[in-house]
Image (cartoon, rainbow, N blue to C red; front, top):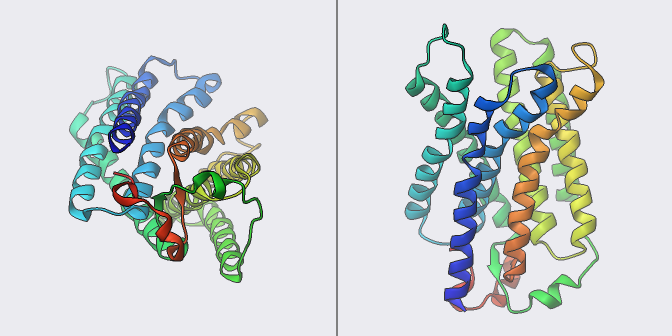
Length: 285
């Protein structure tokens, strides 16, 4: 059983190594307002790997040093392709400092990974680990969702932060706008990855939860686009709508990956229920 799970996890890793190359395709898409949604979709793919790495680092058990080292190596690999794609998109008169672009991109992604991993580690202390359980089928039949005051407080706080950062992204000074946009991106990713993990690996009606996930990711994508200055005043309506792809594309990749992991028997278990886990398969490896 352990060998089967390991081989399937290796297959997932190989698939994501291949998906990570997709942003290189930006170099072959003509830069035009009509192709912006395609460029946005390709550029957002690395976010899916960052989100998945944060889930692995923050919500599973194992050697912390080993996992952090692997995650850093993964980020160093992931950021090669969008950096190279951006360089190839530039014209001949624009200097192409590949090392500078690469390290800037890598630095941003490492910050995103660190923040997301810390949040997921905090979420793990509240809702539990991602564990293998022999009672996965029985747990999957539970359909009633329960919400605590803490959940409502967290949702209200996140909503207030997003709206405030969107506002700040439009009215602050030049430096303040950049800071607000980065903070908005981090908050949006945090909310999205938490909701996606809850929907795919939690107990309950998965399809109903996934509808909520994509509704949330679409709205957050629009908030991210508005914070970046896109609106009906700056472009056609379809362009503003398509800007949600910035978050919908990585969310789709994350959701599909976690659904595959769900089929292997892994679930999000409250800490008091960790006894359901079975031996050496109790956490993602």
